[in-house]
Image (cartoon, rainbow, N blue to C red; front, side, top):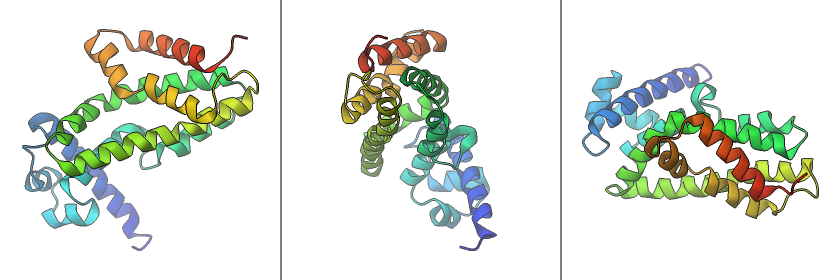
Length: 205
């Protein structure tokens, strides 16, 4: 791929992801075909396969775009490291994480629900759902490690256990249960998450 082709392919991928988001939410993943996506995105069917891949891979891209938001196509660990590395205290890292989870869950909650439904009927989606769960757990080791480094002696847990706590408390399904289904405001969720992560991860000051 030449340097000129790369921006064009990224723009095409964004257009495909935008079309897929609209159709998957409107019709459902199962009822939407690659041909439907091609019409909505105004591209050839083969272009979808060449630029993104299968329908499951299109859904994966939809999630990437939703999670990264305005930072796309940068991966989340890259810009989250930038947000947290400059902080000097583990408590500040927890606040940044909570702010991030409010932002990302509000933007991607519907996509996560779509993935759960699609995984029940598409084995390829089920595989990437499991892979992404594992990847999120691995990614949370970075802020866990930074908390231990920034506030030595205050963190209750080791890196792996702290990452597991972040994964559990900040899971999209928890946000969905409390906010989307339970009627909590995003701010109430944010305050709860800060308190829950602080209690789980840090000794009192």
